[in-house]
Image 1: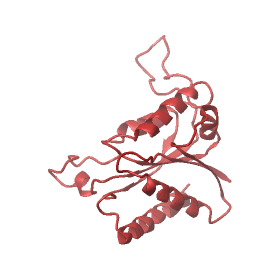
Image 2 (image 1 turned 45 degrees about the horizontal axis):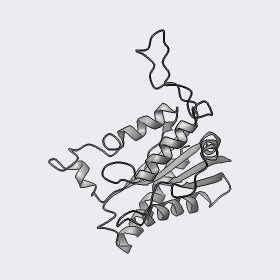
Image 3 (image 1 turned 90 degrees about the vertical axis):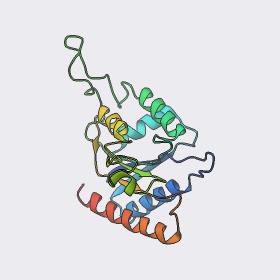
Image 4 (image 1 turned 90 degrees about the horizontal axis):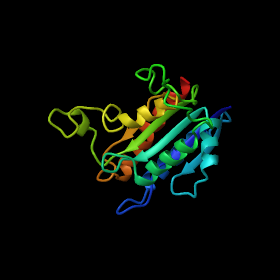
Length: 201
């Protein structure tokens, strides 16, 4: 059985209730639970967090799935704190041992000290921004994708630990476009993504 660790980075703050990322997490669990191939553990960043237990979940998992909204072009504050605290607690406990360099030649091998080799991760994000903001000339993100732009550092963070990226999924126009019809389309497209992704793992 493959071991899946799902992290819900949504939270209640200002006008955001965190409901959509809980919905995406539920879609993911429903998909994975259709057969007996997967053992699943979850964390919600609003939960009371035991750092050692969270480190153990990363070390235990074969695949980590992150579900997060993007606020002001970054992770929500509780999710950022979760990553900072858990990854730091994972020093020499299975997440990373060092930055990878040696004192003999400190100019090379930065980012090679991770301990999570053999694990894969998948990122989903949710945005108020429409997909066209990333693709059309002259629009806000200068034709730079989510993964190569705003989430570049997030992917480097995971690479630092030794994990390998698998294709993620980005939900766009969630705030203004969250009609029942669009939510159904989101679910259909995301489920197809999961089917294709897990078929090849």
